Length: 168
Image (cartoon, helix red, strand yellow):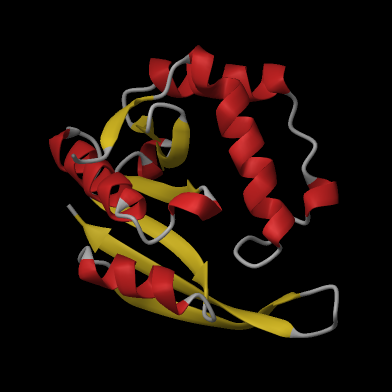
C-alpha cells in the first residue's frame, strides 16, 4: 500500500506543529533550536489557511492515518519572485526510510509542475545530511551553491548550507 498524501487542512495544524517541534528536538536537520520554536497552534493554523488561499503555495501531508510528514512549497509573494518556491520537508523519525519523504517530494514536484506560476523550486539542506541530499538529487534537484560555515551549532561546530534547486 502506498503513502497517502493530501493537502493540509486546519485539522492538521496540531499534528504538523507537534511534528515540527519533534524534528527540531533532534537538533540535526534545521537551524532553529527547539527553544527558539515559538509558533503557537493559532499561528500554525493561520499559516495553513494563508497557504490554502494562495495560488502559488501548498502544504501537503502524508498520512498513515495520522500525519507522518509534511512538505511546504511556498511561492514568492513579490511579483519578481512569484515564479520561485521554497521547499521545506519534515518526516517523523519513525517513518524515515519507509518512502514517506520520497512520496512527499514527488507530490510537491507534481503540484509545482501543475501550478501555473511556479517555475523553480529551491531548498537548503545541511551539507552533513547526505540522506536528504541523495533524495533531493534523485528527484532532479541540483546543487546551486554552498554557504560555508553558515551555521554554528551549540557545541561550537559549524555546518555548511547546500542550496539546491529544480526547474519545473
